[in-house]
Image 1: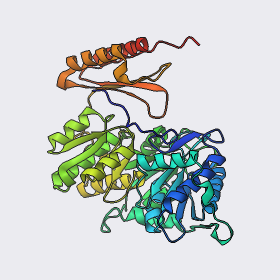
Image 2: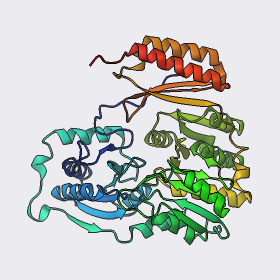
Image 3: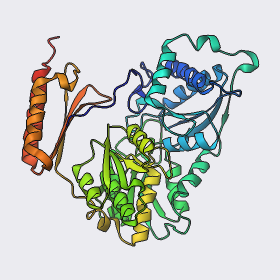
Length: 463
């Protein structure tokens, strides 16, 4: 059936914080300063002490600009800033909890090019703020409520640097696998995308005993995600083959997602990791509620694999925040996205590419088998085709009659053999049309027909 991202009255916050071209509205130092004030105002409600806010960032050049502005806004509202420097998004979530902070802020645009940047916020519990709290922060940005609350004199806040932030996170990540296991004898290729994990990622695996070949670990402020990392795993594939490595690990710019490469040089995406880990836990009888949570984008083959192993797959809207919300609401402990966001709530409160890779390595160690032997038996993908189309307007799909009729026709013809997903992008003015089914030629015809009907529902603008 058709599906769209969860809707809210938020304008600035998307499915993963605020994003845009750095130094162009809304991603300006002026917004960052006012956002720092609003976050501190919300975090300080009902507290008798100064609100404490952790700020972490990736390696983008514009991070200095936004970090300084954000810290100024927090100090202007009497908050205490704890600056961690470049560090993965999940590390900020961890530090927020371990340092008893009231909020955590990540300055990163994840997998986007260096010219972009973004801001996302964690609560004191280490989870991303729910939609309602983000909407409240937006309201404060537009109102004068916080303007009358600015302290003076000794009420103005201060900032410190958390010099051991990286070491704290390295210890935290290593604790996600039992102490009796080491990575001795394993050769691992690690690509940090010249991003936030450039220092910590190689260290985690080396400290556990692995021989590490590092890629994408020389950031210069402008090379983040530039033909490296999770979006461009070809270099990792080549190095795995060249060095006869046991596994390759490709992180994105803020290291909250991962694409893995097996020992034969094949890509292992989020769906494959969810199948591997989910089935392993189902066989051991240790997967809480025998359930894996994924988004509507995950392949039908994953759903069938989990069901065949005696489990259940629950789907959410696109965005790892919605996966986490469903997990917390229903008591599930494992889920993720096809793109490589993997959430292990037993270990972390948000997607963590390093912890995900460690869980895959743990399965390899326990089974005593190469990853290329483990993955093929877990997941048989159903052919899938996704196309995007830019249209001149953004109507609710239910108000596009030609498209709705085309969707119904395809769903009737596919029956239980396939799946249709049509949704608007949460970050771009594009309609996404996806079909899964047993025949690649047929699903291509279906996708093209639905795009044609959508274009007739919303004809090109005459301007």
